[in-house]
Length: 139
Image (cartoon, rainbow, N blue to C red; front, side):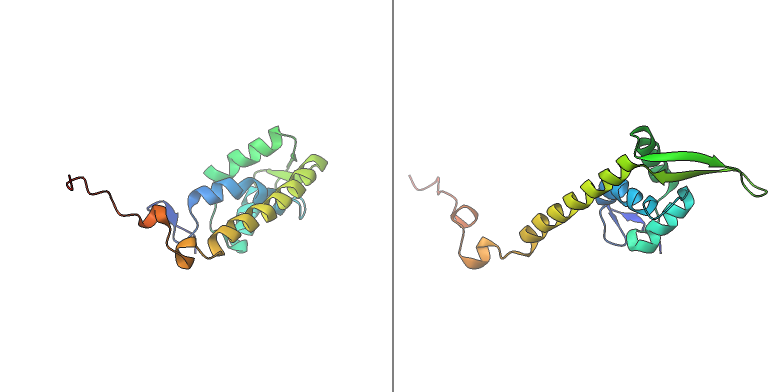
């Protein structure tokens, strides 16, 4: 099932901004598996549980990755059909993927700590959150 955007969230529960922010790393991870092309990348991302990524989101990412020297693009003639733009990870792309992987572990660990830690209000009342408003009529 492909996600539909409903009030800023996909039906699968991922905010679109998360997918947009993570897409370059996810695309590099798919390309790192071996030479591939755009449609196969969208299928791999969907199979991984990220939902259907439209070409309008994917192809600008691929263009940027190529411009930044992270992927190498070659044209391959099609068998009775149009040719394909085949993508391969460069050594710079592999290094970037390793950096993304380290950053992802750190980032998700930090966010997980924040989201899963008990809140201060569950331990003791916070004076800022529970302070009573001053009574301006008590003069």
